[in-house]
Length: 398
Image 1 (cartoon, rainbow, N blue to C red):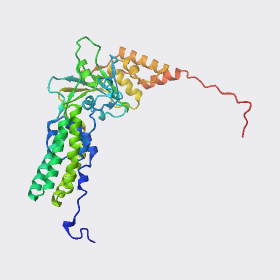
Image 2 (spheres, rainbow, N blue to C red; image 1 turned 120 degrees about the vertical axis):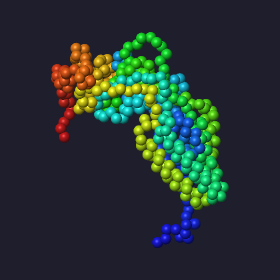
Image 3 (cartoon, rainbow, N blue to C red; image 1 turned 135 degrees about the horizontal axis):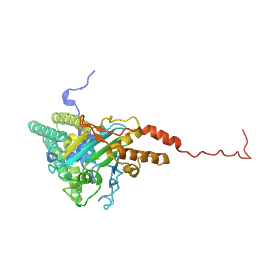
Image 4 (tube, rainbow, N blue to C red; image 1 turned 90 degrees about the vertical axis):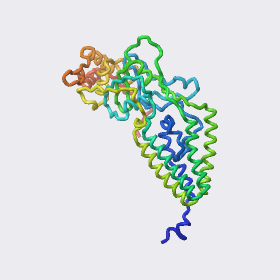
C-alpha cells in the first residue's frame, strides 16, 4: 500500500487555506477582551479571522441570567439605559458581566447562599490583564508570523511571503477597528439613599448577598456597562470591508504557495487552534484586571448550601436582614400561606438579627425552622375544592 505515489513532491495541500478559517467559536469567545488590550494590534496569525469581521459591534457586555434587586432600596437592574434610545433590542434582566466575573457566580452551587462585601479603590480601573491568556495568544501568533516570514524568504517563495503579510496584517487592521474602552456607570448625585445592599438570585436557586455602598452598586449592578469604541461605525464598516478583501487575497496567495511553506502554515494553524480552544476553556476572569474592587467574604456558622429552596431563601432573608426584596423580585409564590411565612420570617429577624461570634468570627443566623413553619401555614390554608360536575342526561356508557 502506497500513501504518497510519486513521493513527497506529490503531496497536495490545497486544502490548507481552509485551516486559516477554522476555529471561529474559540476566537469569538476571547475577541472582546482581546480588543481591550494593546496586544490586539500586533501583526500575527489568528485562526478564523473572519470571526472578528462583523457587520456591527455589540454595545455592551453580555450579562448572566439572574434576578438583581436592592435589599432595602427595592431597585432592580435597569436594562433600558441608552440602548432603548438607539432602537436596539433590550436584553433580559440579569447581573452585569463585570459583576458576575467579580463574584465568580458560576461557582455558586444549587440552593447555596453566599455573602460578600465589595469596596472600591480609586485606581487602577477595570481593564484587561497585561499578561493574561489572550495576551499570550497574541505573542504566540506573532511568533508564528515571524517564523513563516523567515521561511518564505528562505524558500524564495513570493506567494508565501504575500500570504504571510496579508494574513498577519489583517489582525492589526481588524484590531484598529475593534478597539474599545470599558465605561462603568458612575453615580453623580450626592443625596442620601437607603442601604445599597444587593441580592442576586440565580436560576439554580442560589443567592448572593452583596454589601456595598451606592457608588459600587451603581457601577456594578444597576446600569449596564458601555463599550465605547474608538472608531465610528462608518470607519469600522470601511475597515471591515478592507479586512475581508485582505483575507480573500491572503487565502488565494496561500493556496499558490510552495509545499514547504504550506506545511508551515498548516502546523501553525493547528497549534493556534489548539491554543485558542484551551484559552476559551479557561475562566474568563483570568483575562481581567479587577484589582480596583476589593472582595471580602463573610462566613456563617450554617453551611453555605441548603437542601431546599425554602431554606436557601430563609438564609438569604436572614443575611440581608429584610424580606422586602422577596415580593419585589417575584421570588416567593403568591398565596396567603406564603404571605404568613414572610410575615413570620420578618418577625424572627427583627427580634433576633444575625450576630457575629467574637471568638470564631462566624455570623450566626436566627434559630428558626422555615420548612416546619411553611408546612404548618400550608396545612392551615384552605385550598378551594373542585365540585363534582353532574353527569349530562344525554350521556351514556360505551
